Length: 183
Image (cartoon, rainbow, N blue to C red; front, side, top):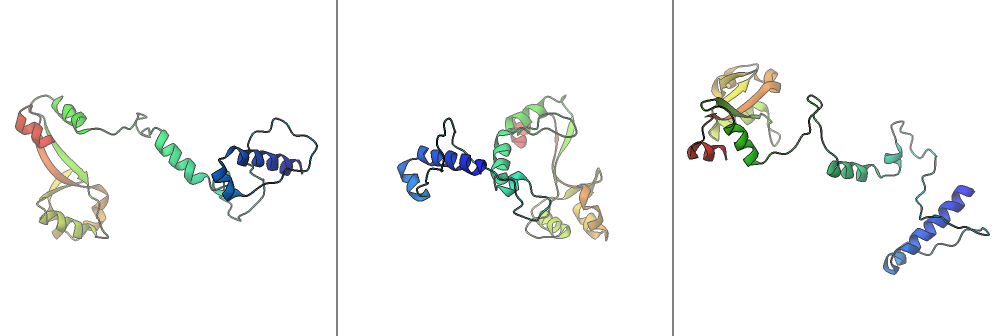
C-alpha cells in the first residue's frame, strides 16, 4: 500500500512538471488517499514481481530500459582492448600517414584487410569478385598467395579464419608519390 501511494504521488508530481501539451496525452491522475505527503520527488517505480518466465531477465530488460542504456554507454563509454588494456580509438588518415612515415626509410610493409564475404557470398565467390576488381594476392596464415592459386585448392573454405586481402605493398618514404599512395 505504501509503495503504491508513494509512487502515485511521485508520478502525479512528475506529470505536473510536464508541459500542458504533454499532459493532455497522459491524462489526469488523482491524488492518492492520504492526509499529508511532503518532499516526494517525481518518481518512477519498479515493482518486484515476475512478469516474464525467462530466467535471464534483468531489471533492464524487464523495464525495457536496457536498449536505452546500451545506446547511452555505447555513446559515452570508452573502449579498451582486452589484450593490451589500451584505449581503442579511431585513427584519422593523417594519424596513419604519420605512423607510416615514422618508420626508417626503406622499411617495407603491406596493407591488408580481413576477408569478409559480402552480400551472402561464400568465401570463394568473394575471392572471385576481388580478383575481377583487380586484387591479385591474399595472405593466408602469414603467407602471401596468389588468389588464382588459392581458388584452385580444394580446402579453401577450411582456412577462411586467417585470410586477408592484400591491398598494397609499400616502402616507407617521405616522397609526395608515397604519401599520396597512403592517402
